[in-house]
Image (tube, rainbow, N blue to C red):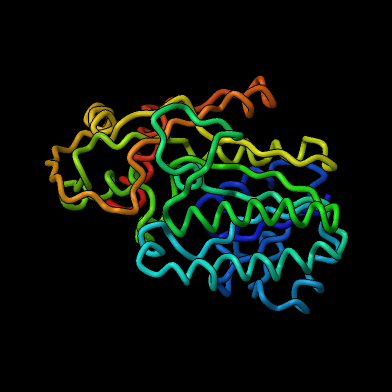
Length: 306
């Protein structure tokens, strides 16, 4: 099977690539915006322009499955510039998918955003629950999901959608403004202080990046002629204040907390049901959040603060 990973230099994409590299009978082809791959010459890599149809045809004519992890924005930035979501995310996706749908690609695996597409909720949300995204980031993620259904109806190209909750773990680039756990750890180690937007009662789910990579890989084991949607969420749905309590148990350094004004782009509550994905992968176990944070903390301290 020939498998393409678009966004292979990214946080989830790099862990997914490492996971796929351990699987026999898979040929990996990596793509990204940067000129070079973080994996150097270990796997074929191409700097990809998602709007260049000739380049897409040349590079994807023999690809069976595409992992689509390309994203050029974050929720807070697109809140101030919503048109950037159209220009940087939706239109490139449309051009790319229209093109590969006419090739031999059989399935697109899309990483969506569980924290933004459902919108405000006071109870557990399932894959079929109502969706009321209020941020441009979530609106476009959900729009892409709908367009995947359109391409399936038009070209019979299947898809798997993974609505991933808040990811943390080794190697996350916090300079992009994502990753509350990694950001907290880095700020504790560099400044001895963390900043919380709001009163700390914002509740969300956290999932370890290696677990996400494992679950994305399992998609290759499913029927390639079927389409599915999954919430990718652990059982660790907690408030930010509860998260701080866990950090206090793991991190040796002292730190102080500053509370500041809530951001409009933040969702105050999300509790994701993970029954469907666990039923599809009955032997899978999520990493306990304290264990995951411990591994993340040790990695950051060894690699960034030595």
